[in-house]
Image (spheres, rainbow, N blue to C red):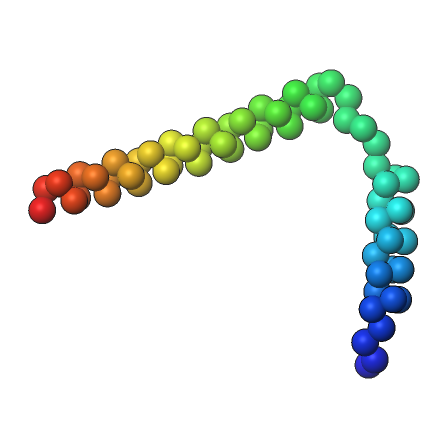
Length: 63
């Protein structure tokens, strides 16, 4: 199998163009749903990070 970067780049742009022609802009309810899910994910990761830091702080101060 021969490495041909020009063909790979051409295939990438062809598939990207196909995706852009098929995809559509989300309407308002879809956008709000995605926004809520993203915000929930960020909040969960923030709480998880806080809990880990809190446990780390408790372990370091107790020893």
